[in-house]
Length: 409
Image (tube, rainbow, N blue to C red; front, side, top):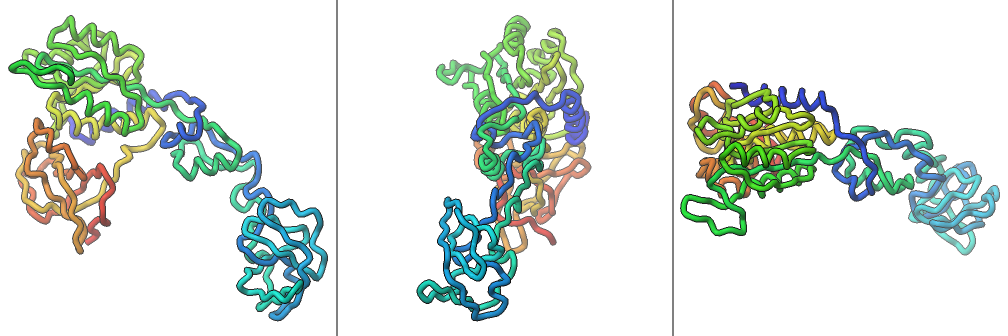
């Protein structure tokens, strides 16, 4: 069995061979959270003209070389105005935040440092060239790269693109993820389960996880534990960038998904990973589709999606890593574990003066759906240990931002 780190490296190496998905041009709102596929070059400078940072008075700094200078107010310029005349020498202009500076002005003094006496402004301190002036191009120069290829489109990038007159952005296409739930025991959410049956939850949880990862999920009809049903279901996945199956990848007589994938032409690159929960896990390729065979137990399915599928989806979308923080905390309760497995412990975080305490959920059973609700992080207990003592500092994969900084002691 591969370690989780080795398995992830193998998966991401394959994603790197495929490369990010092709680009598409979308609206600014649709681009949010996605990776730019091209550099965005500024067609104009920002700001496009010298303007005032403050409500105050624009002047030539040389006209107020010391405190007490008295200058006639010759102009008044508001934001949105286009000054028609240059500033006469020896005068100043009343300006407001964002107003363009009249030609000749090279400084602004805030109104709190100026007393007004009719049409005369008295400056309480000497002027300085550039004080409270936003020069043209100080933010972005025309022709410069304003947003770089591969960078995340966040709200700030949306604002910058809009200021540059871009209503659309070139971003990598969202991965299309086909989700195939398998098993004779599962029934759709709208059907009352018969004795021995359970309602399918995995496809819904994984569709939500795919959406959260920035992908487009498609839940396929359920497949039973027989070759004919699995073959028909796999045909429906044709054209997806990623296929995620749940169940049927262990070693039981009815675990036929791996066999069905291989019969359909899939090439498996790994099977079984040394972790808990989620040891029965498969990864491979099927033509141009990356295939992930996840365990059937709900928590195992969810954890392996977080560890392996989510980073792969982000790689296809041109984004780095998993998008999750990895920060340490201290285990609040001792934990036993198999020596040869890495254990991913569901925890809730509790801030304290010394950092973060990681409280393991009482149930760590992979079939208990409640143990996947409200989880703050997955505490990582490495292979090679059989017991981790209370207070041990361990890394954690954070599913939501921690409420306090990590323990640095």
